[in-house]
Image (cartoon, rainbow over all chains, first blue to last red):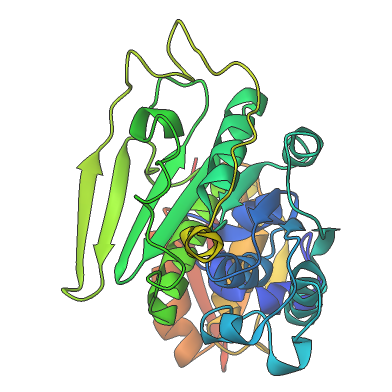
Amino acid sequence: MPAVGFTEEQIKRYSRHILLPEVGGVGQRKLLQSSALVVGAGGLGSPALLYLAAAGVGRLGVADGDVVELSNLQRQVIHGTSDLGKSKALSAEASIREINPDCEVEVIPERLTAGNIRDVVRRFDVVLDGSDNFPTRFLVADCCWFERVPLVSAAVLWFEGHLMTILPGEGNPCYRCFIPEPPPAGIIPSCREAGVLGAVVGAMGTLQTVEALKLLLGVGASMSEHLLVYDALDCTFTRVRRKVDPGCPLCSSHPTVTDLQEYEYTCVVEEDVKG
Amino acid sequence: MGQAERTAPVQQVDLTGQVCPMTFVRAKLHLEQLGPGEAIEFVLKEGDHMRNVPRSIKEEGHVIEAVRREGERVYLLVRKSE
């Protein structure tokens, strides 16, 4: 039986994609030839990496400088108990390879900084931001804008999730049109208060992946002009319109942010302890 | 183009050994390889194949030009949408 451009194993593995009119063999080949960078192999990054691998995205980048801790396992489902103490990026790589040997994995087992992020981001077709702090979020968002790489950004706190897509340079709002600067310390809940339901994070990471796959396939409508708000307690989804800010520090005609910025990351609890 | 040339299949693909939904998966992959308006003949079995595959082929916009039966085997001549 001729494989028409796929191996026998690939035809079986991706059969449920091939059946979709929006995907087919043509779309599956697109995915196999595409690449995605996931920043953070944590609560959002875990389902993202698992589903991107399952979907057959040909090359995945995993950027995370942390190690697996016990408190992570409540939501970071790409890691297991036997991975405690290991590099999250390397732990994620092992899970990805187990799911799908078709995926090439590029491991970046270090924190992304203004000094290293451009070289990483420009190697990928899309970026999924699963970071857990505003300094990294702004760094990733600014870099994707400068490098013209589409970004799917999600965030979760308590029982609420947010999701948006940023398509650089196409007249759509950027990240800073929505949040111009990182919030001041004290506005962000302290680590003690930043509880979250694991499955809510999983839901948002999965939704992030759906948006990324749609971009790679070139199907459906993106979240480039809206913010999706998921209220898990009420089980409601709300779309909020996002608009270009004419005074945006990044994408306006007179930007004040013209290069990557390193914001200081502080945990309010540590500040309390230091007194 | 003469009638004989128009209905001559480019290729015959035997799908009788396949179990649904893999039958249509393989049919679809073969159809993707064709140019617009080109033809292909699929060999199917009565039963699940004939309940599912012709409908799926038509839903994708292709045309079933002829159906020929020889015992348990069904020969489906399909022309890819233009």
